[in-house]
Amino acid sequence: MNIDIFKDILVPVIGGLGIFMLGLEFMSNGIQALSVNKMRAFLAKAAGTPIKGVIAGTVITGVIQSSTAMTVMVVGLVNAGVVGLRPAISVIMGANIGTTLGNGLIALPLGPLGLIFAGTFSLVYCFSKNEKVRNIALACMGFALIFYGLNLMTGGLRPLRNIPEVMAVLSTLTADSYYNLIKCVLIAAGVTAMIHSSSATIGIVMGLGAAGVLDWTTAVAFSLGADLGTTITSWIASLNLSKNAKRAAYAHMSFNIIGVCITVPLFFVSIDVLAWAMQWFGGDPGVAVVIEGKETFPLVPVAVGLYSTFFNVFNTALLFPFVGVFDRVLSRIGRTDAEDAEDYSTPKFLDRKLAGNFPLAVPAVQKETARHLQAGAMFLDIARSAKSAPSDPGEHYLATDILSRDIRDYTASLMKEDLPYEQLDLVASLIEEADFTAALTESMHQVARRVRREKFSSQAQAIVDVALNKLGTALQEIMPDHGVTSPDMPAGHVSLPEIEELRARTLALGPNAGAAERGTILALLGSIERAQILIHRIDAERKSVNRQSILSRVSRKRDEQARPVSSNEAGFSPMPAE
Image 1 (cartoon, rainbow, N blue to C red):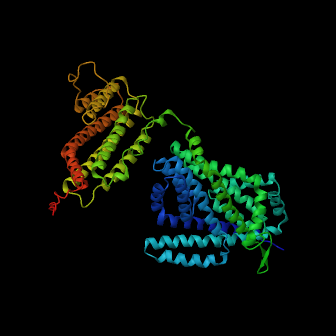
Image 2 (cartoon, one colour):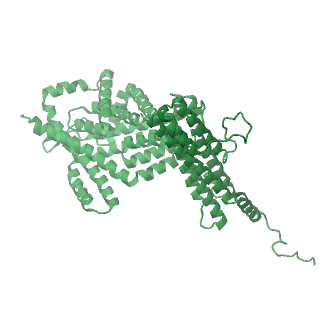
């Protein structure tokens, strides 16, 4: 039999693989465009306990059809402080289960119909003006292209069985011993790590198995390696993120590595179980079926999909009881004393259960805003290189920004339409104070960033020190307990120069400081001036509404409504005795 390698093998295999991966991309993009924001919000709320985390991870990954996207999303949420490490670990477990739904769908024998469905949905995508309809069409088009690409690959790989040289090489990739099994697993892991898609690797393996190039046992072994190699993407995604985000990626890697290490010794036993189970899914996957005069193995993709599902469910069930252990162990990796400091990205006083109780919710907002202000004041410690200050200004600012959004959302939720005007006015005042506090924190961050990235001469450093002291003194207006370096002279006898005078001193440095150095000081003075203005605005906002008086009236009214009404107060007189 004459085989044209280019026409009969390279064209359908490369074209089929490209169409298959393009289909995965289209389907993932279409579904994520429809629902990823809702899924991210759902995940942030749902992942409260390990069990809820597993369910959320399974459902969301099953919907968006990408464990890679799901894991990267989780790592990003952990980095942002929205999801803690412990629930993230359980979510990643669920993602491993959710991705098996896609593997099961790929195994369906729909290949020949893929092209007509892809063409139909591509026309809808091209001519529709509705964004939602276009995204649905994109997802369906991708789904159809997956089957068409797999069908092309299967047809292109089939002639390899008639090339002795190729079969001689592939015969060394037969999972007939533990040594060869491990070799197959590592090769599949390497391929998956390079293409960043376990689904694509499993699709290729299904094609090789369906074409009879790989026996079904070896195809199953390759699917095991695909689950191992997919962990590389989450690790790469976490490289420049926080330590907790890295730990979430390490959790993903740990699960799959441990699962593979446990499954490999049990592989041949599990294959016997799979062969027994296949009698309910069509029969022996090693038996060929002749279609249009060509021998094919349509049950191999089914066997691969079943095994991949079984592996991930078994792995999750086995390791789920140890979520707490993973949390404790991973939390110690790369841990420093700075991590034991307070986490300002997580609200401390904002309890959603209090949102309906106005007299309790308002003090909670005030305490959280004061905490946000305290976090902002820490930038002054960073600028002064205090030992207790956070080491990374950017990371600390990210935490305060997250806290600011939480305060704003919580406070806005208090603004009910049926509230009296004075209560609405109080809530509006809290929102404005929180906004001014966020702006002050941003200015303080600019101060710390400018001081930290510039090395000043002695004359310039003297101006910077005075400017920082001026800012510290100004903060005492709204933070009476804020600590600044105590002057040697009695309080009230120290006079700090105005910003204009410090600008004049900076300009007078002349040759004692470079242009860049003077420019940095001038920008620094501008940030301090803005900070002073915001400090005055915060102080004025606190005094604009008599908050305590309003809360007292609301509390009194609630107490009166809760107090039982006696018969006399209700206007009834006792019945006279007869």
